Length: 251
Image 1: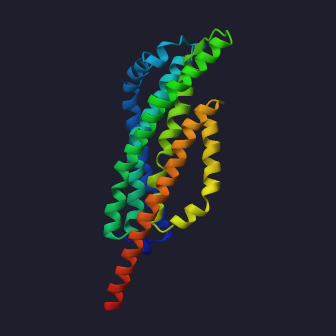
Image 2: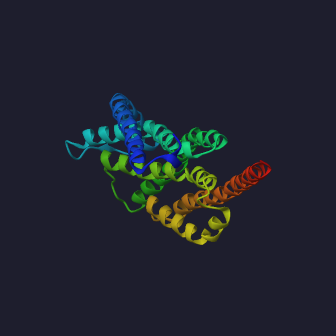
Image 3: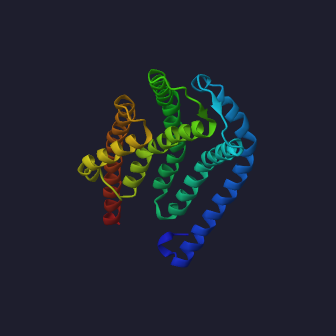
């Protein structure tokens, strides 16, 4: 059904259907994640970063809390492609056939970028931060007794935002293809975007300059890469629009 011909009630019904698909899949993913969460938690506790720490549970509910949090995060990651697909399926009727194929290809790219962001933060940033914190505690003669709840919350705080922030190129490419933003607009708001990214970097890193720079520099590079991708997508969109107008005038 073409979205231009849909009434507001039909739009609402379509959104409701898509939300039901997502919720049902999320529930199924959550059930499956309950079987995966325990071995993932055990594995993460035996990594090189965690091995140097003495992880403790300070409350009886801490193991259950970590278990449910891990299951929730895993189910969200599993459900993410389904969410993206249903967003695409909702707007697809309003796109040309070529645009449908192009935008559909964004889904695997988005998943790969999310995995890339998680991997970067876990394998590069997270070990550095753990080493920095433990060294600081030793220099201050502080005996660190780490709660397992706090450890995993800190792990999620470092890794999950990076996975989301690495979606920036795909989001900008998608919005450019839809004609919502343009490269000129992105260049115009560059200084404001830099400021927002600096604030985000400050929120997800410890208060030292090196950690902050390790997060800030990749984010700024991502923004510049996104502008370059937006320029390519914008030029293609303009050429397609010109060809479409030429076909319409020739007819």
